[in-house]
Length: 125
Image (cartoon, rainbow, N blue to C red):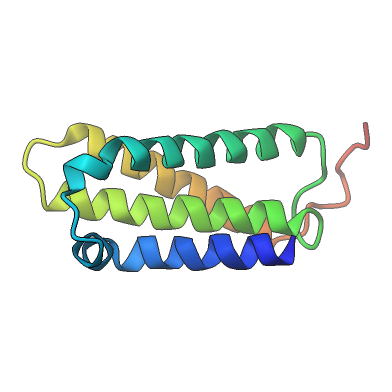
């Protein structure tokens, strides 16, 4: 699990902060890699969806299920900021604005869940 987390984290950081440099390094046009990038993104989203579905019954907040909350917080915050940045650089992009706003809202909610105690009034099922 540790090796997997290190490899995925490294790839995630590189792809997040150096996408143009990576494309230039491998001397490839973005259009030729687009189907592979979309498949990888789809795999990541499907994996996150399965993780969240399996954790939906868990108590999340404070120290409970912190990895799930932190993973979702990081994903939605980074993705939301990237979408809003792209929307601000593109004219006529309401879909980017709406998607970015949804992602930022989810990031705020996961931030709240991550950094607050779930409360004593939570019923155990």
